[in-house]
Image (cartoon, rainbow, N blue to C red; front, side):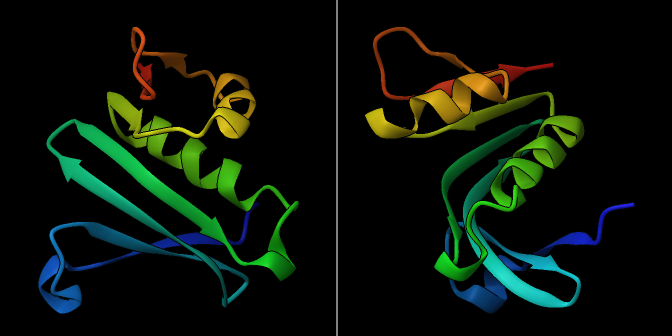
Length: 104
């Protein structure tokens, strides 16, 4: 049983056009993600796992949860150094863009 929780902060509270999520493990905030939820499409702009918590699979678990909840998950503007991560979690590149997608 995982103790990872993803807590979305309402846009109005954040005063943002994005959906922000706190990534929490065992009651401790281990990271944050900037996303956009639009119906069945979940776009990830950034996932930040704080340095002291990196390497524990929290980012991967966040992505896996998104894949199970939404039909299409898009990773927006993926850096070249991160393409291996997105491939490992089942995403494919969208044409010649820097965007990657997972479709259920």
